[in-house]
Length: 245
Image (cartoon, rainbow, N blue to C red):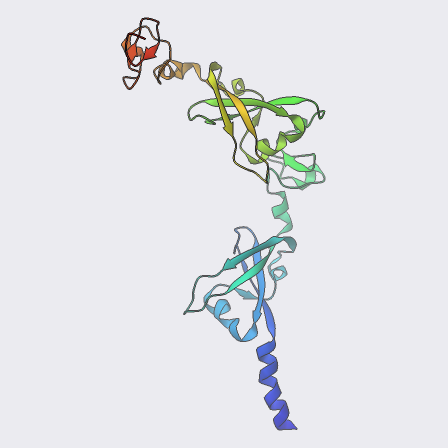
C-alpha cells in the first residue's frame, strides 16, 4: 500500500497547475498571470522574473482583459499562454478615454471630467444628437498646418480623447490663414474612423513660406515660387511649370 502511494505522489505533482504572474508583462502598467504545470514553473520564476501566485499578491486586482503572448526563450524554454491582465485600482484613473461614473474616477489632470462615461478634458463635448461641433488637430492631415472639420457632437469625444484632436477650430492654436482643403480618413480608434473634408489653416508667420510650396500658389516673381516643378511665376500671378500658362 505504501509503495502504491509513493508511485501516485509524483503523478499528482505532474498533473498540478500553478499560477504565476509578472508585473508590466505582457502589458506595461498591468500584471499578467497564467497557469502552467508546476514541474515547469521554476524556469520562468527563477530566470524570467515571474512570481508564484496570482496578480492580487502585488495588488493588481482589477480585471483588464487578456492577451496571448510568448515569453522570451530562457535556456531553450518558452511559454506561450493567454495571460489574464489585471490593473491596480489607481490605474483606472490614468487619464483620457478611461471609463468613469463620476469625476472622482478620473485623474483630475487634463482629463479630469467624467462626461458620457469617459474621462475627458471638459464637460461640454456632448450636446444634442443633431448638433455638429468643430474639432481640429495640428499637423494633420498636412504637416505644418492645422486641419479642422465638423462632426456630430455625440461622436466627437472619440477623436478628442483618443485621437489627439481638440475642440474648436484651428484659430484656437493660432492657425488663421485659410490654405485649402484635403479629404482624409483618420486612423481607426476603438473601431471608429472619421472621413472628412478638412479645412486647412496655416499660421500667419509661416504663410509666406507656404506660398512657395508648389503649383498654383500666388506669386509676384519667380522668387515667390519654390524653384521645383512649379518654379516659374507666370503671367497670371501663379507658380507654374512655365510662363506660358
